[in-house]
Length: 231
Image (tube, rainbow, N blue to C red; front, side, top):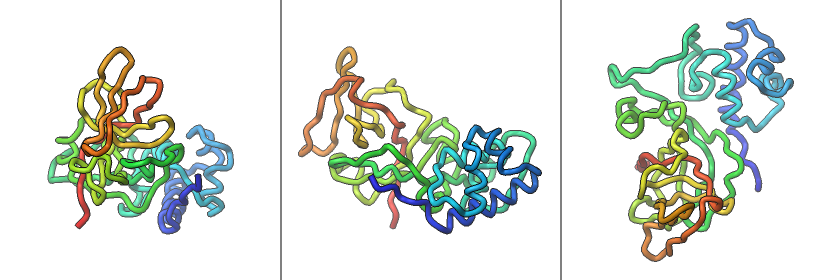
C-alpha cells in the first residue's frame, strides 16, 4: 500500500506550532518525545522538517503532553493557548469544535486496506451542540472520513462525508452502521448479531448481498454517527 503523506501546509503548521509550544513550556525535543512515549528522534525530526508522514496518534500524544488542544497544532485554528488543566468545551454560545479528518480510504464497495491512517487536509469545524446530539463521546474521538463505493447506496452516498466515533467499538446496538475491517479490508456496513459469535454484515444497497461472518472475521474501528454533504 502506498502511504499518503500529510499535506505540506499541515506539516508546516505542525512544525511551527509544535516549536512554539515547546518554547513556551521550555522543553527539549528529546525530553518531550520521552515523556510522550515516542521514539527519541520523533519530535526532533518533526521540528526540523525531516519527516513527511506524521500519524494522528503521534500529534495527539504531543498535544496531551503539552496540555494544549489537539487542534492548536493543526491548520484552521488559532494560536497556542496553554492551560494547567485539561481543556474543556461547553456548548455555550454555539462553540465551534474542529474535528480531524482521517484518511482511512474506507470502502463501501470493494474495499481498500486500512492498516494506516493519516491526517488528511484541514479539520472540519462543527457546532459542539450538534456533535453532542450525535454522540456523548469527546470531539477528540471523532473523525471525518470519506465513504467510497455504492454498497450502502440509499443510506450513504458517494458524495457524503461521514462522522466516525472512535469511542464506540463494541457491538452493543443492532442495525447501526459501523466502520469495520472485514478480512483485513475496510468497509462501512450495517451490523446485526444473528447468533453466538455470528454477525450479519448488511449492505443497504439491495443489489449487494449480505454476508454472515464470525466475530473473528471482523474488527470494529468505530461507529458512524452522522454524515453530511459538501455542496
